[in-house]
Length: 168
Image: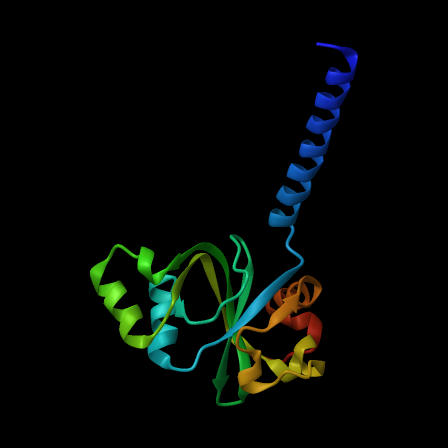
């Protein structure tokens, strides 16, 4: 091999190495998350019991993406918990026949399985979080892309409510 070929191979290796680490870093340190609106108690029960959420939403779901769960409570719209995505399956890939029939019947195109789900007790009212200034309200929060800083602020507020002046 001549010197030129060695230099080109070395340069290609360095470029591929940089691209690989940028993609890897992007997957581990995502810049955004999402919110999902839970509409019914059976859906809520299914989410917390099985760790699965069935949806028709099409988003860039990636492993370890944090997703906030929003539901209407007696006091108003609240964030009731969050989870980190472990696996995303299209309904056509689901091996369990009952699950497949459930997805097809309800027109869900995918199943999101969560690695860990944390329930907030008490739920955080949206009007008491950084989402209060967001122009998206109500149903428009379903599938909304949220910045990483916003999600971290909400998770900190849920973990340490006494620092935010909550009396709950």
